[in-house]
Structures are given as structure tokens and as C-alpha cells.
Length: 490
Image 1: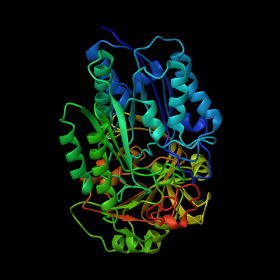
Image 2 (image 1 turned 60 degrees about the vertical axis):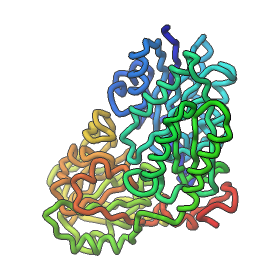
Image 3 (image 1 turned 45 degrees about the vertical axis):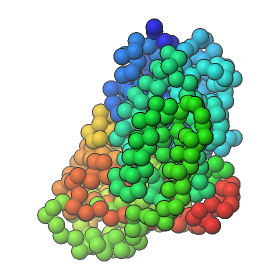
């Protein structure tokens, strides 16, 4: 039997403390593709779409994919953007009949008019297709999964890794469950357990720490005939919303009581180990001191600025770490990205090798992560910031930093870009003439994803908190909508 499956990808992780709304151009800057374009660009990479297509080919599905859209994490999504992105999905849904719908969402979208962006997508979809048509959803494990999401979709499956190296695999897992549902072999629902926390103690990190054991237990439970998927979501704490926080989801059938008990057991472990943090968050001065004293033939020292991570909606223009490195006399280093479109654009006409005076960074909210730095440096590279990933997360995917420049200041190669992205891949340095693996020091803006590509070349990794808007000092942020008490605010 050839099933007709409608699919769409609409993904955003919203940092409600970011003062810049996320508009349609922000989606164009990351990717905004119609169905055929998306399949051509993303259909054989580490994406949920690739996993869906893998399963669809095996089972002979007739797949209509209508849109793939994602913007870099940022402020709330505008109504204009939300309406434009959902329109192709809703229009196609009305042209059924369909046997099922497959959605690739993030799980932490907040719009200008709604705290639960994914729930709103599902509500609008259900108004067209009815309550019973099977709907499968893939999620990022930094989702703030709401009760509405679980009520409106039978199947919800999150990635099991952070860094996210199993995205394609997750798409395939969810699609296989959808196949069984369409055949009538299973009748799944998804149960939810939640704890009053901003996030799991380590943001859901799965390479080390307690999430390893939790996922091992989850996979063991999935061996039961009536449990199809267990998703453990560390949550996205930079969202001031009512349903923020870690969740455990169980997609299952049958008597819900024992399944709910399993979800609660895993959620209890997240709560009970809420103080067991793996990272030691250094100040920028402490990190710079270590860098100044660093000597190793085993590889570079990597310094990750956790708080100014554009991949979590920080502005990426904080200067505190760079200033500390310069003050400490650190050289043979690279630093990136510095998100400063004004400076990157101004440098486009500079000659390679020329000496320039520039004021970089700190233009958005200098109270978070440091104000502008006035520097003199040598221009090393200018141009359009297109690159193709080569590592475990971005391998084969094309991205664009927009207008880009590399300026060397006192022995530090500084990557200055226009479009905000975190460092996920060595190609983000190498494409622009920076041999990161040959440097003594690599300073980058990312929380955890960088480890997939940069971890193998590092002799040591340290993490600092520069005080930008993704700081772990949550008391410095103005939460007003999160229910109280919530850990660690209370």
C-alpha cells in the first residue's frame, strides 16, 4: 500500500530575552526552501528530512514535502513570519486526503502572539485534518514540550544526542512509527512528565554525565512491546514562558499508568540530580590566564564562551572574552564568530594585508558580555561567508555568514561575520583562511555542539561565562512568566 504523507519543517529556538524579533528574512538567512529545493539540498544529510525520505523510499510512500524553514535562534518570531511559514502546510493539508502528517519542529518556538509556537502549528493543522489523522513530530531535545503538543500529536520523538549527531536517525525512527500507525499495527499516544526547572543540570549533554545512564534506561524500556519511543528533553532555559523546563516523553499504547510511572521515574532523576553540574564556568579573566600559560604539543586549548552562544539566541557580539585574551597577551590564536554586520560590511573594501582601525562587537547590549573594542589589525580575508560543513553535524550542508572578514590583532585571527551562527564545524574557520587545528588557542562561541568537530583536535577544553544573555547566572535575567517556584530561580 502506498501511503500519502504530508511533511513540513518549521524550526526555531526562541530566546525571549533577545530584543531582536525573528522575521522572515532571518529564515531566509538560514534556509527557507520549498519542497523540491529542500529535498535537493537536505535530502541526503544529517537532517530529519533525510530520515523521512529514507523510510519513505523503503515503504513506497507518496511524500509531499511543502517547506523547510529555519532561522538562527533569536527573539520571538513575528506574526508575519509565522503566518508565511505555516501557510504552505495548511494549504496543502486542506488539499487532502492524507494518510498522515510528518512535522520537523524544534519544540522551543515562541512567537510575538503565542508562547507555544509548535502547539499553535498543531492546533491550526488539526482544525483542518481532524483529531484522528496520525501526526508524527520530531523535536530537538532542547524543546520546552507543552501539554498541548502531546495532546495534538500522537508521536513525538526527540534526538538522543547532544551534540546532535543523530538527527537523520531520529527522522527515520519517527517515520517508522508512523508507518506502523498507518498500517494499524499500533495506536500510539505520547505521555509527558515535567519538572519545575529551567533546564536539566547540564543542558541535556549526552557525551558524559547522567544523561548517558538515563538514555540507556530509556532504550531498555523501549524493548517493551507497548513502548515505542522515550524522549528526554533537557529544555531551553532562555525562554520566559509558562511551560519551560525538562520533560520526559513516552510514545506508547495500552494502559498509560505504568508508562507514566516510567516517565516520572526518569523525570525524578533529573530533579534529584539538579545540582550535579559537569561544567566549571570560568570568568573570562580566568580563561585568559590559562590560555596565556598554555603550552602543549598534543593540540590546542579550546575556550568556549557558553554565555554568548548564537546557537542559543545570544547576540554573539560580546567582547569580554576577546578583551581578556588581548589583555593577557595571548597569541597564536583564533576567535569566532564575532557577530558584527556593520564592521564586516565596512571591511569588504579593505585590501588584504592592509592595516585597519576598527571598533568591533558590543553594539547590541553592551551590559551583556562587554561593549565595543577599538582595535588595530591586519586584514587577512574578506568576502561572502559561504561555507559547506565537513563535520558530524553540518557535513554536506551549506551555510552562509553573510559579509565576512578576518582581521589579525596581536596574533589573534578574529572571524567577523554578519549572520549569527555558533561554531559547529572546522570549516567555519578553515573556509576563511584560519587553520584552527594548527593554532595554540581556539576561542569560540558555543555551548556544547562545538565538541563534535572540535573535541577530536583539542588537548583541553575549558568553558567560560562572559555574562552575555545565555549566562548560567539566571538571576541576572528578568523572568516574569515562568511559574514560581522554579529551580534554580528559587
